[in-house]
Length: 125
Image (cartoon, rainbow, N blue to C red):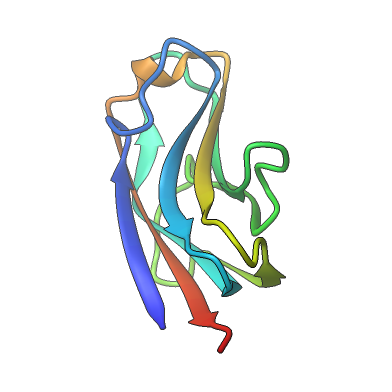
């Protein structure tokens, strides 16, 4: 099943160059097959010189999707599909994080940006 999550610059705002938020929670025995990142509005503002987002875990923030440039102009063919095949835990749930990283300007300097992440998951019987 595909599930979508839309996140804006305000959701990722922090007085830091990186910030992670919980995007979703994988229940026990749920397998993550793929992640798609597609931004509809470029992330920008203040002195920000680059802005990327990745999908993963606290210890490995890019485990499911490596850093994708959401600072670039958005377009119909601008996006990232990452293949994954992970069942993180058979007993307890696992938080999936979206991590934003900026250079030069802090994340709270952003004044624009919207990204949608789709996760493809199934449950083991």
